[in-house]
Structures are given as C-alpha cells and as structure tokens.
Length: 411
Image (cartoon, rainbow, N blue to C red; front, side, top):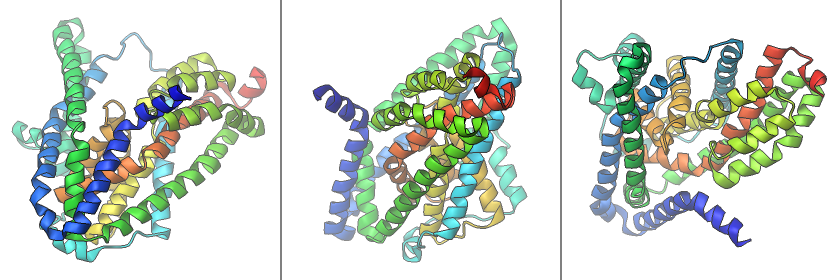
C-alpha cells in the first residue's frame, strides 16, 4: 500500500506541485487584483528561460534522433503501413475534436482580449506558408518566431548526418551529447514551473479577471468528455476493423493493464512494457508489435492531438478570433501532426508544442501560460489515449499487412 502511494506521488509529483503553484497564484490574483502585477517578472523570467532553451533543444532532439537511425533496417511494408495508421488516427482525432468544438464552442472573452497589448498579424496563406517554412537569413532560424523553419532545418541536418556515413561519427556523437545536455537543462528549468506559472497565473487572474475560469472549465469539460467518447467508441471501431468482433473482445480484455499503467505513470514510455505484453496476448505478430509500440510511444499521440486542438480553440476564444476559417483549421491540423512528433522525444515536450502554437498563429506571449495550464490539466487522460492507442494501431497494422484473417489464424 505504501509502495503504491509513494509510486503515485512520484509519478504525479510534478503535476501536483504545478497545480499547487497555480492554486496559490489564483488566490493571490483574486485577493490582490491588479496589485499582483508586481510578481509578473517572476513569470517572465521562467518563460524567458524556456524560450532560450527551445531552439537548441529542438535542434539536438530532432537531428540526433534521425542521425542515429539504424541504416541496416529496411523500410518495408510494415513501416509504411505503420506511418499511414499513425497519421490517419491522429488526424481523425483532431478533425473530430474540431467538429466537437464547433458544436460546443468555447465562450469568447472579448474583454480579456482587449487587455492584451500585442496585435495578431494576419496575412495571406502564401505569405504565412513562406514565413513559417523558410527564412532568408541563417540568424533568423535562431528565433522562436521561426520555429517551424528551424524544425525543417534540424530534420535536414539529421538526414545529412545519416547520409554522410562514418566520416560524420564525431558530429553524430556531438548531437547525441547535445541532446542529453539540453534534456537535463529543460528538466532543471521545469523545476521552476510551479513558481513561474503560479506567478503568471496570479497576474492573469488579477488583471484579466476570473472570466478565464470559464475558458478553463469549458476546455476541461470538452476534453475529458470527448476523450472518453473517443477512447470507448473509436478504439472499439479500430479493433473491429482490425479483427471483427473477436478483435474487439481481445483488445478490451488485454487493454486494462496498459490503461491503468498509463494513468498511474502519466508516461507513454513507461507504458511500453505493459503494451508489449498486451500486444502479445492480442496475438499480434512479434515483428509488428516490436516495431509499432516502441515507435508509437514518441510518434503516435491521439491524446496530444486532441489537446492540441483544444489549446488552439481556447486561445482563439480568449482572443475573440474565429477558429472555423478553413485556412486556420488546416494550419491547426498541421500543427497537431508536428506537435505529436515533437512532444515524444523531449521531456515536457508538450510545452515546446505549445510555444509552436503561439509562434505559428502569432499570438502574444501572455497566452502561453493558458495553453501550458490546459496541457497540465489534461495530461492523465492524454496519456491514456497516447499509450493505449499504440496497441490498437498495432492491430490495424497487422490487419493491413497480414490480411483480414490474421486473428482467426493466430487463435
């Protein structure tokens, strides 16, 4: 009993500390009002530290992961089908979330938006695409405002290192070392999150008013309601597509342990052993689950896909902007795919994805704590969808590579 309690506290310690900081900040904002502006610099210091870590962190994480791909592995049919399944399921969850937000729109806080000093720049789709994907000077890559262009640059550096072979081994080792150093640096910064975000939240409540709670409450209700529906209905549908009624039965029979593991650890990576055992019991071929599940942990995140859309919708509501413009929706889907990939290889990578949301849409820095807090509040449910979605994806990959009778044959 004591071991279980200590394990729970260990896994949720960072979330508990962060929620404690936010709670204290809320009370300070409510009681002190606009006088609480005096502690805003504490929040600014935390955000500035986070901003300075973003660029080198992304570079080393992406470039090192690609540079260290085993060149002896063949990209066969299983890999191709796996990528398609990952993309399709992430997009389905994102599109359904957009539809849900359209049916149950978040309240727009026009008064709050009026207090934000920065203007949101609007441009044509072509101008946005050019500015997001490219820059005309190398130095501009080092700005968080060019994050998407920098991600593309990091991808190319990784592939170039991979293509260079043995001669690039020293550079490859440098990327690996840099990746580890920056991960530890981010962990150090995030120790300050309860104080930094607590101070910023106090500022938001004191200056913008308690109307923010309406946005948070609606966001949480939509997120947990939709994710519960998606978890039960669509995972059942995916299992049915993969193996019919027997597929549904064998999936839910063996998905209990991974689900509770995801909730208790709040980590997709920590759920990998439970997922591998479950996949074995689901009769998924070993060569498939040994590939899909380890890669799915960092790359396939249905829960993060849903939270990405909810965060974007929340900021649009606070800013009094229309989310349902076709160009905005396409951009949101693109961000969701990128965030799903970027989050996986970086501890606390959700915060990096949230900065990307702010950058792409040109929203002011004051909105960053809003999406960071939403990300914290939805993390347990997001982990359940992220982690258990890998086993049902492995079933789908088996269906499309081994044929429709794979489960019957295995049983």
